[in-house]
Image (tube, rainbow over all chains, first blue to last red; front, side, top):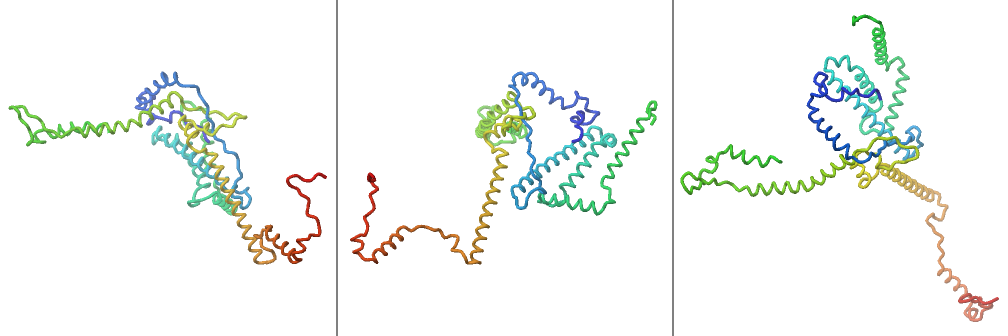
Amino acid sequence: MPEPTPPEHVYGLNKWSDLGYTTIDMLYLRPVRWFHRNFVERFRGSAYPYYHRKFGTVKTIDQCEIQDQICFYEAEMSFLREKRIDTMIVEILHDRLTRCIAYEGRIDALDKCAKEKDALFESHANWYQKYGEMGVPHSCIDAYMKQKHHMIWMRRHPEVDLKGWAIEREYEKKTKDYIKSIPMPMETR
Amino acid sequence: MVLFSKFRPLLQTVLRPKEQLQSIVKRWSSGRNMRVMISEFHERKFFDMFHYYFLIGLVPTFCVVFYANVFVGQATLTEIPDDYEPRHWEYYKHPLRRFMARYVVQPFDERYEISLHSIYTHVMRDQLKALERKVKRLEHARGDAKGWFYRPVVDHLTELEQKKAVERSDGYSAMVAPRELPPPRSWPVPPKT
């Protein structure tokens, strides 16, 4: 996943009202923090752990034998798990962009939220390419066939550049870095 | 819900007494009037019962939730140690959720394994049925076997009958005067040799 959210994008309406101690959020958060410091931290029992569930690697559809129903089931379950994780990832990136726009305001967001916007665009496009437009309901076999057809299409249309906009953004970034690297007095760019 | 009891005095300020029940006003001396109003008993009774049954559930729930959140606290995320396999409830953070996972709900992995087992059973059953169908089909087509459902069961009574019939065909005098000695006894105690 790309870099984590900067902390100032987490709460506050926008950067002009969010000074950190005068928002209405502080009316709710301050008593909670006081209670937590004075009562909860004193009387709480010992800490205990919880773990992140690890799913073992199973065979995917293309590695299963014919008529091996158990293998199909496991491949399907892992496909669904990965789909849920990817959906959450896209949702989180969308949320980040929303928070960035809310913080910066509509006009500054055009310059300052470009990274979040690109991340969302790329992740959404990839999600659509992997899971989208297959019909409801669909299975892991449909997704596998979609991948196969996409590869065939790419082989038949080699002139189509699917990474073009990313290359353009890279070029743009390199130009800007070059311009920034030229030393000039007092912001005369 | 808590504001139900405020409605009545509001109504009474809006509909003033002389508009309310102008005809039923008792006077027992000049200037002293008794306001005849509708009984509040039913309202009070309803609200009392409502509060009582609502709080019977709410107070213990609140205490339990308060204790779980303040005094027990939520779990901290740690890496799984190499030699340890976590129990299924140790994958959850909130203490009440852990409790439910431990004592109430079927574990996640167990559900998965049960599904796999059921698939396996169905597959095996289908394969056996298919095999039976194939065998029946082949036997019907070829007609060269006795029938796969034929069980070689030994019918002792019939065999005995057949033997006796053979002996009877020799004649009853052959049974009366046997050619050989009867076999030695084996019960209760075999003879000493």
